[in-house]
Length: 222
Image (cartoon, rainbow, N blue to C red; front, top):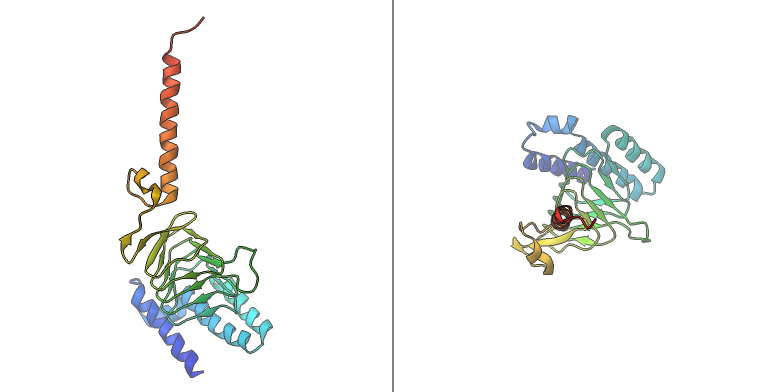
């Protein structure tokens, strides 16, 4: 019980440190859905570990209805997790989350449906996952890594790296840009495969437009 109280205190401190909108600990404790979800998960996980599976699931589903955040009671969550806003966050059964991580709304830490046993990702310490990002599969996102908003991560991310895009790729490690073979084609220096594909499509449209104008301007063969 003392350990649970200490962990909840660290969760509370994490919100105060990382959310500039948090005005008091009382506000966070009673009104923040992300904190409520993590608090409920601590109880559900204890029940899960002590083979009280039905009670564990009941606590997690009740929390889901109240907060819009679904955390399987089997997930292992370290200290100081901050779920900001939180609506639509889903955390699967075999997920492991390190200390001092941050998740934004719409994040999914899930599986692909083809794995057995360990099916969900492992997040190291100090990992940040942006709004709407999906991390799918039994791989590791290393310590201090960043996953950009809207990214779909299907492979391991090294420590201190930044992953962006659909599917995601690493664009920075330790603050230094990672050079990819197709980066020279990126006219606007955005190392995002989605942006690069849009640029390619725009170029193709311009080529077709010029071809159409040439055909319209050609003399009639009749």
